[in-house]
Length: 196
Image 1 (cartoon, rainbow, N blue to C red):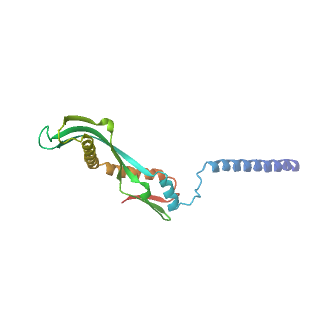
Image 2: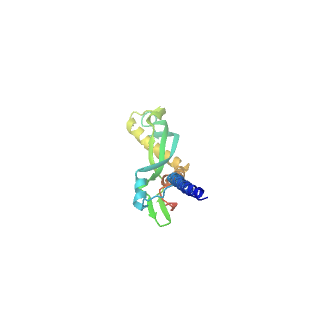
Image 3: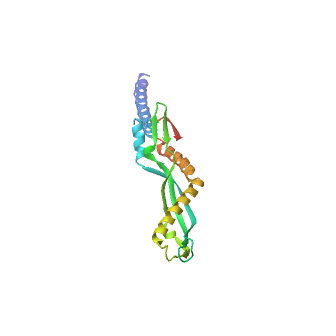
């Protein structure tokens, strides 16, 4: 009877030791796959720096094709000149990230976005076509006329782009993009994105 007890004790001790080692190994493997708590400090400077890398956040594009008519002077062939110009203008709208305001609190981060603006506006030179050209003997400066027509046409096209809602769409898109960019960088803090 004593011989059997001596044999069981070392076997039970060895079995307990093996089970403990296996449990420690499993715990280690599980621990490696669990999400790690972020030790990085969330500050206004760190968030501003991660946003500043973007520079400009261009979120919307708009293309406008229009017709611009120019007529100057009163006497046909003598002082009256003009033309019709078909053109395509391209616009990009968004926000300037340097104007974003960040406020970090213990439980939330508030990001205030500036109002969306037209970031670029240009007439595509290859799209310009002239029709109904009328020349005048005493009123001739075609290069200057075309430059004036392009400026006026671009101004008209930009007004149409704004009326069509490019700035509103750009503002909404900027809000979504900022949320995506900062996702996972704030620890347990809530992200609140406001608009000026």
